Image (cartoon, rainbow, N blue to C red; front, side):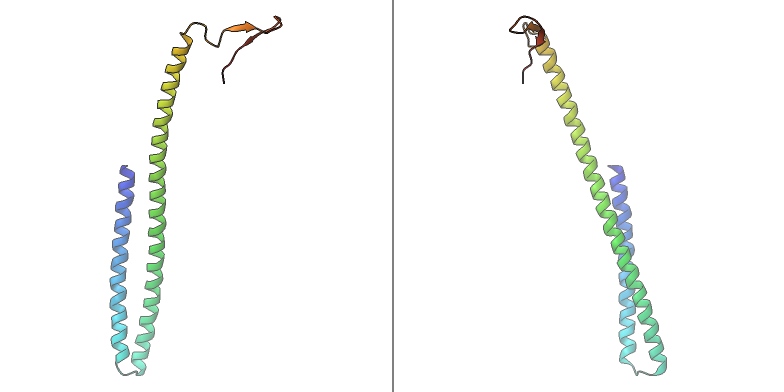
Length: 132
């Protein structure tokens, strides 16, 4: 359980970083829009191209970060679910073992149980009767 909480805290920090990247990207897009409203002289065209390249790079970084967060969250949730299932299954297996051990002790103390050898109908070979 502590490992699960640590992973969630880690993912939360990565998500905060993604939010900051989103905020930065919005600022650059607003800056680009402001420049595009101005006169389109040679200097502004260079600035527009530069901003477009930066926006593309940041957008790709954000996309990558989102995929990483999604994958990490999926993996973390799967591992936690698996841990819970295994913990529940082991408890169930232990309970089944204890109950079957108690049943076998009770049946072996009974008189004339099915484990006593007897002879076959023709009287030659002993065999064990089993119940199904």
